[in-house]
Amino acid sequence: MPQITPKILAFDVFGTVVDWHGSIAAEMRLLYPQVDGDAFALAWREGYQPAMQRVRSGELGWTKIDDLHRLILDRILPRFGLGDLPENERRALNRVWHRLNPWPDVVEGLSRLKRRHIITTLSNGNIGLLTDMAKHGELPWDCVLSAEVFRAYKPDPQVYLGVAEVFDVAPAEVMMVAAHHEDLAAARDCGLLTAYIERPLEFGAARPKDVSPVAENTLHARDFNDLAGQLGTNAAPIGDSDD
Image 1 (cartoon, one colour):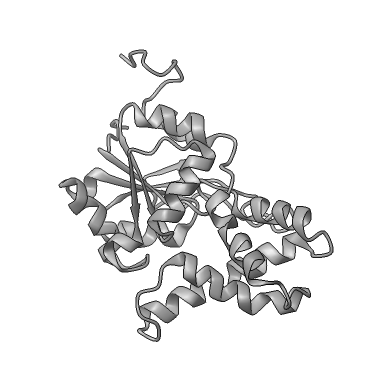
Image 2: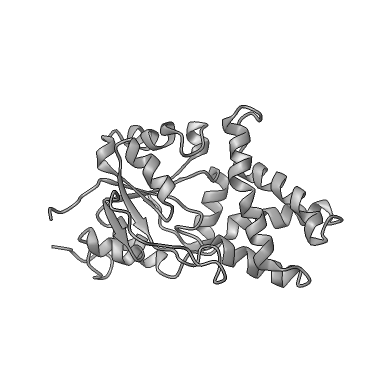
């Protein structure tokens, strides 16, 4: 099999890079122990696609993810007995998305991949959110790209083709890296290479994901270190030669 050498690795973030479910559930258990943190995290995330669809359909004008997260939060709080939560606590809780923790393999894996490739986010998250998240998790991005840049949410082709345009490369020189087959299918339709990352616990231990390979993906990896190995980046310390 010939060596696959994309110039740009573009990463989905929520679920692929960071453990949104575990991070939100842990924070809820700490701040509001009377609430089922696992159920709260799932309910918040379940509003994500419907909220973006309101933007895609034109029902809402362009609205960044921070604001969509807040709309969802305000709607679900009464369901969990938190309908009287004051404004300052709502604002602070909404920013939990800025401090989601990376999966254990992520920082090492990204550092390895960064040595041979440009690594960038390609997330529906807004730029401020993604930047805060990178600072919190010590994520070594070369660039932070967001749907906010293109004023369109994935799976709009503008987002996938936009990353190729930003770096002045052909779509086939970009590899989309994600833990979601629908994201990868949309990227593939735009001519990008695709790498699936197994995140079986994205929705928590009680709802394990099927992470079976899909033949259409260019690569299938257990985690970021496995991806680095498949792309020919060894585990030598940063700064050492791969050759």
